[in-house]
Image (cartoon, rainbow, N blue to C red):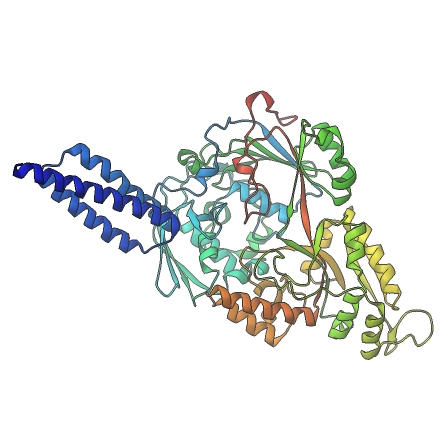
Length: 633
């Protein structure tokens, strides 16, 4: 045996060792998130070994069999840390066999006042703008704790978590438009860092009518533009949601909203009715038509930056048909006039046992617990509701079990606080207020209320215990629920009146805090931030969502929660807040209802993910033979 034979044996052993190390590294990436520098060190050692093997005469073929394994480890770790320029959020969920085309028409119950999501807090406006615009990054649908890049090519975070350095993708185009005021045509305008700075500056301008949105950015110090494709976001302090808020930033088209000389005028922005009827975005869809009180139509944006990266939505048209009555919407669903509809509990139980919803039917049903809660809210600036014993009594006078059974058909969970029922932050040991007229009456008597004149209505200091609760017109749940509540309130001498308003007027009354009581619902964030609804600093602001609740202990918990990164401690703080609100009862918390969705069976790749509030419509598609068009388009 010669010297070359021994060298070949040694070389073979080294190759096998390198391959084994590569496999171990790949598996390790799948199991844990290890330190990136450690990977680099191991890869450097591997490359040194490969170079030594080459020096000993190992063939290029042998090396080629080893290097991809090493690169796979790098790629997997790079994806996990979201630094790869080629990475795009949620690409893996887009069906590569999808056939482009078709439409999806959804029913909405009312038109919107304008399309500007900064000054219009309407959910439908936010939904439509979400289709038409994009953000720096998005959560992974399946693993929502991971952020993946969209408009951002990459980002870095300072060790103190106060500075985010963003690098934008090049070539992201704003949608072309003609300015309705100046008549100027805008084509091939690129999104730059200035548009992100403009978004933040407009929100933080105290004259912009967006108090409920501004509160989220109150600790954002500034946005510094480094170049057209790079900027930095500075936070005043480490803030738990600064990552989500920073990576969730969207650009605002400065060339649309500041198309004049001089300083930006926020009051003009609020009242710019012509421009506020428009959407100029850079997302998957563009606003094609808005037929007032009839329909909003979006069409796929063919110059969407995600197209070249594989995340263009297959569905060509997304439309919102304005149908005021729930029964009319349901009939339109059955006849094929609309393709998607959120069902009322009564419809889900009593009207879907038909062939249309059968195994071979043209419609399918989907049910999941929504990330929302409903409530009765009290205007705490009204002296009637300032005693917590009164608020507790009112909570005892709402028979939630009966409402859940008779109105929701059991399709929901009774809740006792404002956190997502199926999250670790919700304390299920805290029980909702059970219906109890005797306890309610005792609390009201303790607070000084009594039926002095024997007319069946309590009074105090010469004033009757009566209030008016707002009801949304044509809202089937409220139409059934509020009369039940009114009847039970009367059993304890409380007179509740019901005032029905159109949605636009209802929303205006809430924003102006011109109401006594209301009943609506809130969508709950994936990670809780309680500041907007419950911090005392928001109570006296115009257009804020805090209806007058002020509590020093609540403020302490909220402030601590915002700077706490430890998961266990965050859960503990949320439990403390939950207990406090259960005692104070600024709302009577009602239900977390199930989302009940009816959808055409022709759609494929229909999926619901953990963090999403609905199915991911952007990944759905339809076979060519089953595709439909929008009528009259």
